[in-house]
Image (cartoon, rainbow, N blue to C red; front, side, top):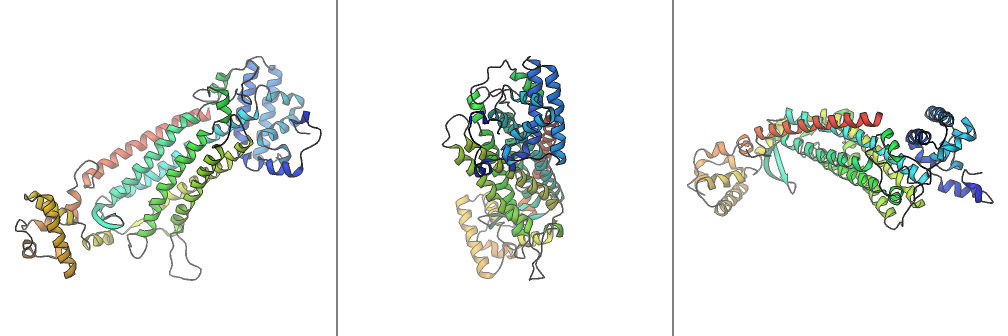
Length: 471
């Protein structure tokens, strides 16, 4: 007989049991379900709803159940539907009928919402920590490449030279926004729905704030209907995860390009590449490609969750069982990608000479020639046209700007003097961008210093939240 089967005259169809059971995936919540139950039973005793003797028996029983689940000794069955009913069944087997008192004053509706919040706040801290390691690896590459000049691109066409350290720093700040979004979402995750019951609260004189304090929450969900039906925190997480995946995918795309023979700017370590079963010369950036590919998987979970929620009336509906698998899979997908990414970036070999040679073989210093003429008094629109003519001449002659003689330069404008050759070198062009956030070496050093300060703050945030969670 089901624990809820008192008003039913026959058991559920076996196919229904199999189809509706969530134990196959929500068993991930076992640790958090028991954590919430321990706080709940303590509160029931403090409020005089159950005796201390009963509370002690239930508490000891829950700890034994937790140990058996962790060791694999406990058998979790689809017949008991979900992790909540499985835990309660195991508890009753352990301590007898008194175990049935555990569910006093709560519903599976507020219980599952609690479990998911407990799970997700741990996942947020873990992901922020992993993002920090990726940021550190990018910063290390930035510091090591403060003199490495590479082509900067727009439209995947060479645009202006930049420092490779500047390029790496861009991703540090990109991931910092991801960190901050996760941190901000933590305060919305860290609210307790327990006490909302099925939808309307409970008749028992419970103390919701007691549970808040015991579990390290920032407060309660203020409305019982909202508490059990809210999955905004899951959607928000999936949206933030989608942005993280986007940023990872963009960097992966560049790594795939840069490691090709056409670019030949980097070489990924053998540990993070694979070969071909047919072509012995191949070294494929499979890790970067797969991380890029899994972005679609994360997007899919976001769209799936939004679609599930869009037509649901208040309060709880069985549809909401679909909230877990996408969240679990997204957490694991991101953890796997981020754990690989930090060492892959750290061990990446940067081919500095190839990057520098590429800058010499393009017209990415053309803007600087235009700026040079502006500095000599020519209006920018006029200088833009003049430089366009110079570039066209070079293309027709199979030359680049620094291949021209002074006489050739002066045939386009007599404002050009001998100092043009220094003005158009890659190093001068890069360091001329001496504005806040620019690619000049001293500005990139400023960015690295600022990013390092962010990483220190992030670590302090993690330590604070780990203290709350562990307590």
